[in-house]
Length: 76
Image (cartoon, rainbow, N blue to C red; front, side, top):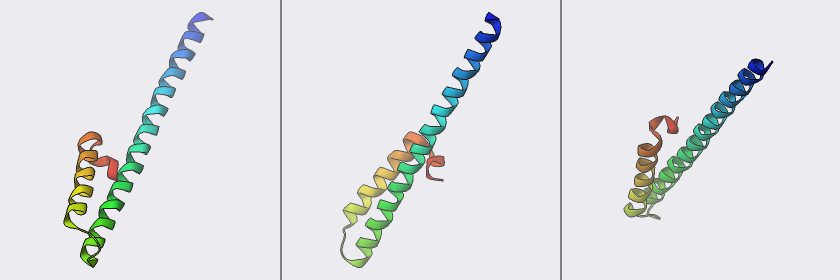
């Protein structure tokens, strides 16, 4: 009986770890999408004359930092 409980506990811990990993991936993707939206808004504002190149560069740097930390799959 103890062997069965040990296996069940191990399987539950694996499932919990996989769930936490998936949550982390989803959060990284959402953050990446938000950064890309901000980059697009900064670029649009610059093109319309309401923004600056510095704002675009700052938004681009944030996207590049996110990619360096989470990989480009976080933008998909």
